[in-house]
Image 1: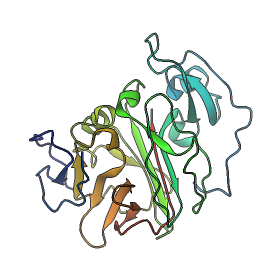
Image 2: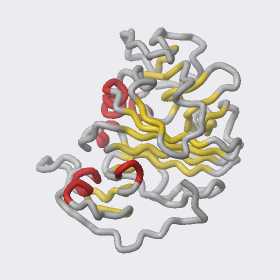
Image 3: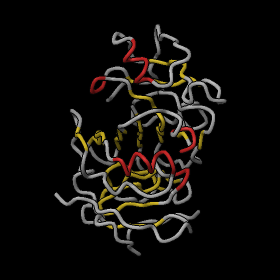
Image 4: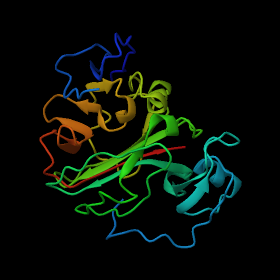
Length: 263
């Protein structure tokens, strides 16, 4: 397995493509400027715990906590107001805070929603739903992500274009810094990472390229991808009209579900 080697970002002039060795690549892909279920997930008996900075903190203080909506205060005693968060208290030990959720319907191209004062909710988990214009559609800006204490990130996605499931976590320091700042790139995404049960995708094992310096869109637009046949992308881009999970970025013709969690 090839390890990603860090490289110096040479400018702050937009998003930069890199190959898996960290080298800038003009053909790195699209450089854009500047579990299953059967419908909406019902949240029942979700505990509301105020004054806790993350879902991981809630899980640590109460190991019996279940999946649901909680009130957290990401910056603790700082000036930021508490926010509601959806917590996965089950997967791989639980304690995951949802920071990105896009359930996209084929043939649509809604604008991405950058959240600076709220976190996305968990809506449905069935391919074919359209969650645009709901609280379940959007992603936290790096400025908000940075307020949440975490040392792991989890990427999950599915697509109607194929049956593969992408579900892995990473503790790579460079990638976690990228999610917090929008600067740099996920150079160390190949290692260390953990493939979670049910993962069958080509990515991240076959990553060849990444996009860096994406700012508020660090989690959405070709954060990592495979640029050899068969190609596989992680992309949600209303600008380019592309929504793909572990498949070639050909447009918005597939139903997709993308989520990112931190803990």
